[in-house]
Image (cartoon, rainbow, N blue to C red; front, side, top):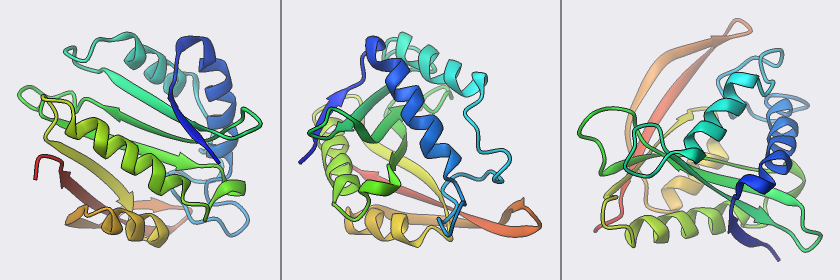
Length: 180
């Protein structure tokens, strides 16, 4: 059983610790790449930490804003997260960019689905948001399957977008209209 709570600044250190572990697992021990980074690049840099913190400090009307929610288990441990943020382009206030992840020890428990249901509901109830956009590595079949189950539409695939450790990776863009 998990609960979904908005991340407050007082829990940011716990989130950073969770995210550091989560990111370090990118592409390790049979885990599909979920970030377009090599194993050596899969560290939570100070720049990434600053992006999360800076985005949380901005109001929803400001360019660069970000809202983060975490899935908390019964032991009060962060086991997943989901965030939305502005696209950082003029005249795109009606769209948000989605990011999410689930601790590898808690996958296949429908936590990702619960996080997506939560964020879709949140966006539906927000007058300003009409679309949720995302990008996913095309090889991340479990993620794409989940997004399709949640009615995200596949828009495009960029062939050979990334070359990581001499392997080519395609990048898929998806979207969901939350006002339909």
